[in-house]
Length: 145
Image 1 (cartoon, one colour):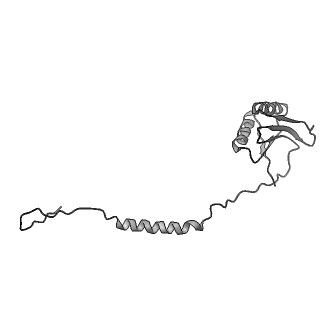
Image 2 (cartoon, helix red, strand yellow):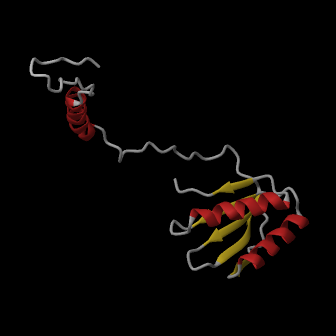
Image 3 (tube, one colour):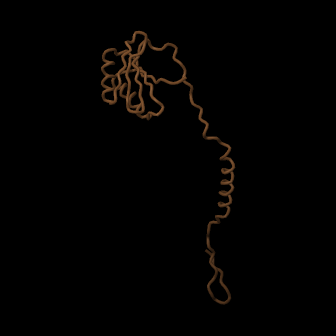
């Protein structure tokens, strides 16, 4: 810091070192205007979802579990030689017990889960997880075409 002296003998002038923020404010305002103009040009509401296709050959028999929003679940065995037995369970523990017993009877039978659109996705994932814990390797989701 340099001091300048005056003839009167008073205090000299001190130089202050400051950052000039005016150019930074100008740059930020230009960026703000650019983003405000560019934001309406993008459409975030459009999402490209994958399409579900039919499998080449559906399994001849499978365990079908239908989940409904009123916490009722229906278990049936579907296929060519199915007996048409449909059982409804209001409790998830009873549903899992039935699924375990069906898996113990026929270990190779796959499971198809069809859930109502009002069901929480977490419930479907938990059912898939429990089926995998029982040792069921083939678990599928039914979709609308």
